Length: 127
Image (tube, rainbow, N blue to C red; front, side):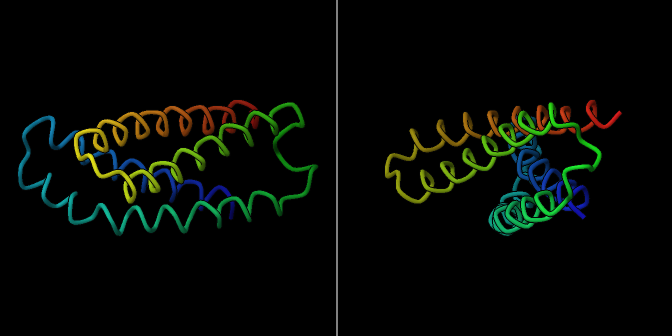
């Protein structure tokens, strides 16, 4: 169940990041669609992450991942979750729109990097 919730989290993150791509390529109708989906997807990701963490921590220690891979996986996942929390807090507290958008973009890229590292650790250590 942990892998399933992790896949759902990653899909939510990709759909959230697709908004930036649609804007960059000038796909106005797609950009508006992703803007409408942005808050519900953010909420879904915010709720799915703790569910993913819960199911991953329930797995016995003798499961797929070795002990060596567990710590980097936890650290990259924790960094990802922390970035998400900081991004949400900044979006709701920062008054300067230009600064908020810049911080939002930077944290989004950091989240993508952490997610790719997190998934890479899981894929390569399970093999």
